[in-house]
Amino acid sequence: MSQQARGPTGGLPAEWIENVRQRARITDLFGQQELRKAGRDFLAHCPWHDDRRPSLTVSPQRNRVHCFVCRRGCDPIGWLQDRQGLTFIEAVQELAERYGIPRPAADPEAEQRLEAERREREHLRAQRAEQQQRFHQALLKDLEAGGPAAAYLQARGLTSDTARAWGLGVAGQRLMLPLCDAQGRCCGFAGRAIGDQEPRYRNTKADVLFRRSELLFGLHHAAAAIRRHEAVLLVEGPLDVIQLHQGGIENVVAALGTALTPEQRQRLERLGARRLILAFDGDEAGRKATAQVIQDLRPMVIAGSLELAVLDLPAGSDPDSLVRREGPNAFRQWIDRASHWLHWELEQLLEPARAAPEDLAVLQRCERQAAALLALLPIGPLRRRAEERLQQQLGAVPRAPAPAAPTRETDLASPEGEAVMRAERRALRLFLASPASRPALVGLALQTPLHRRALECLQVLHQRLPEGEETQEPGDLLPAAALALAPRLDPELGGLLEELSQCGNRVRQLLADDPEPELMAVLDVLEPVGSTSVDRT
Image 1 (cartoon, rainbow, N blue to C red):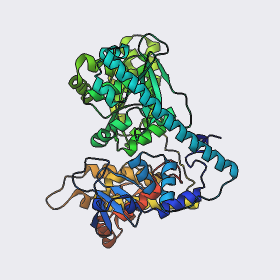
Image 2 (image 1 turned 90 degrees about the vertical axis):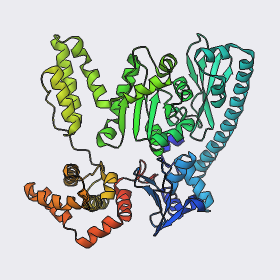
Image 3 (image 1 turned 45 degrees about the vertical axis):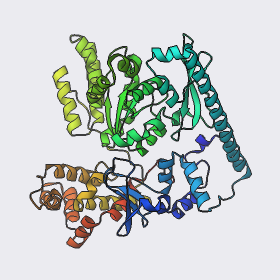
């Protein structure tokens, strides 16, 4: 069984992983000069946004870091993953070695398998590094001699300095592009045909080191710019990435294909990418790929945890050709004009109706597709805007069923479910009492329907409050506003808001003055970092 098949824990005992998590100390992962004492905690510069003054809270008590500005946080395992570009298992093993935590004995077959995979990775990593050096030296000779690879790069508008910076190489009639991990270590190659060879691209075969689903081309070059801009541009091909970087547009990566896998998305999230801009090729395949990514990411963008935009490039164009034809500054204007994902999807849906406004079959098909899209949108501004556009084009708003409530992931009658319900009530109380905590609480996917309704109500109420009047901030008005609204709501929702609004002055003041311990405790339960209860990094 492969490591991937064994899941995120890599076959390691969950109890041992949790022991590592608990014994590793978050403060040990910082240099002494990086930390500044602030009460019970420490402050450091946040790596996930342009942090001019330290805003990253390093909490020994919670054994976590959390930034109230960019709303990101993690535990020691997640910190090592992010800062050193390690996988979850690599980070756990690194911490275990640092703290002298022996791995429990497993069955001999599993131990042999893990050791064999480790040795294979080391062997392949050394092999790929040697190949990259050999291919690169061959390209340097070709550049000096003005050979076919040099002519190809010149025709593509790529300089010799760019070829050196990206470690490009040549083998036969193919330009060899190193496919690297987040630390810049070569895991494989994409061979791009210099002439008319087919296929145009040939990638290294998948093995224990090279897994396309886990890599993003150019990530180690783009990481700093992604953190700085909190945004990333996703393109189709490696040469698109290199061309844009050469033009000074550096927060760009390619997914080694048109799909964006959960592993790739998590790597971008760890870099602080809160906005994703799709810039696929301006052809039918590119539009289909864009539609697929939107479909995959729609739950996240509707929940507000990710902003998604689309560059609707001209037919027959791609980022590489546009930059060569119009220049980097013109391409920046394309980025500035990127469409909201819903606007792009609506225009694609309505295109057949614009092309054949009298064709009833076409209009009926557009109506069915529009109704299906509306059914996915929650009641609110997105749905209203979609209805307005559909009314404008089709003359009527297609009937859509009310959006279904999110599927509950936890049995709320179980002990774990009861813990979730208690944490959700604490989150609502914190939203009422602590203005500083609200950005981190907005968009939480609460599992209890009543609590979900209460959070939506409080968010809308907060948005409608007037701006701060001299010394009185909107946050001071929210509990009173919720209390005044409660009698006009249904008894169940109104009773909950009334109860939460009257939590007592002492508790409210404590939450307003020092919300961080409560916020971290809530997020630990409701929004653990990672995909499983074990892998919370």
